[in-house]
Length: 187
Length: 310
Image 1 (cartoon, rainbow over the protein chains, first blue to last red):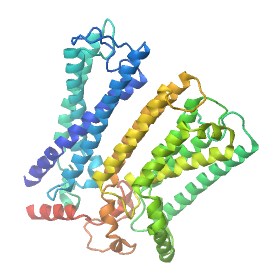
Image 2: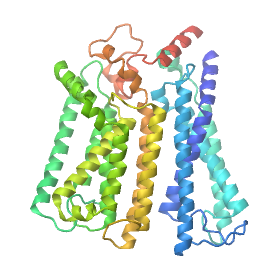
Image 3: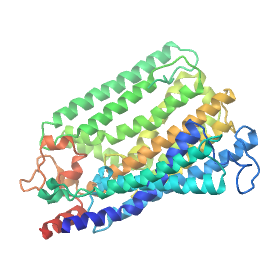
Image 4: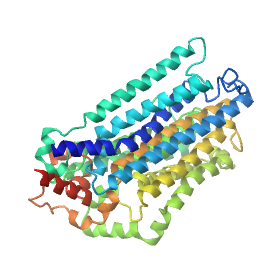
């Protein structure tokens, strides 16, 4: 019983670092895949039809592209800060005297990656609701079906949160781990 | 890898570039053969040698050779892909393969001590100071792309070779300082390394954006190529830096271990050790320095508390 309690504490203690790291890495998936490679949207590509009443900054004019690049840069900074902050938090958690996870083994920890997936999903949900739905400054893929794309983005976010949650819950000790206390519980 | 990056041959291929390319490839492949042989010998020892490390070295070698294959293409994006492999991806894999540790475990103790004296010497410490390494990697990019050096390296094969040597060496030392599996005498703390990495990322992204926009650069290339090359540098650079940051997770307790080196000599396998150090066990598990002993105080405390509950 105590072992399971220990594992639960470990899993919870990785929640904040994992989520922050996940928000950052999720931002990179968006930034690299959607902004850079597919070029489906940039930060301000639907301005002009947004709900803030901003001027239009299409990616097809030089000035529009400049503004989009600038705001993509802010987004990029945000995602990097989240990744670095997540790693710093993780290091602090693992340096605590009561940390049960081996610091070097954390890369293969289900708890950490479960929380990272949760963070990625949260990124999709928050970014989707604020930027696509409330502000409307860009959509996943502008066009007739943009609402469908935006909803798909939210569904993906929800699935990631659920999947991540289940994954971190599954981080229980295996029978084998009990036999060798030195290795500690699988966390 | 479908792109064939250029190393020594932008434009015309001369006899000299052929020689330099072949020599580079031979040295790289030779180093790989030596590494694999040494690692194989250690696998017979009780402590063994992680297959992951060997795989990492082989991967680094493959990336280097790909980057060293000369191409007749004049496209700036090919050139950029080569630089990414040479300065970021290959160094990361090589730094994770712990070549110095392998060397120290393979040679006689006296040779090892002499090598360590060299690593710990004043000039080596100055050369591998985080600020120096940071200026070497980011500063190197600034000097290459924003001064006539780039044009010069296009026409002078020797300059070009030196530029690439600089990319590789500074990239390797930077990766080693941030996330290398080998011990480092003055490795900064983890929070400090995160800040250093942040500064490097910022510098890299700004240079990539300026190339993308064609601002301040002194490269003779069409705007479309500049945009594509800047783009490639921006996001492939990000991916390399994310991998480097995650690699840090894997190796970030090595520093504390370095102080305990005295107890880790080969042959010091205590029978009462809670973890059997069989070569077979080694295979699936990352670096031995960490797992052979219940190492850090944290782990020992965990062991004690786990024992207490039963």
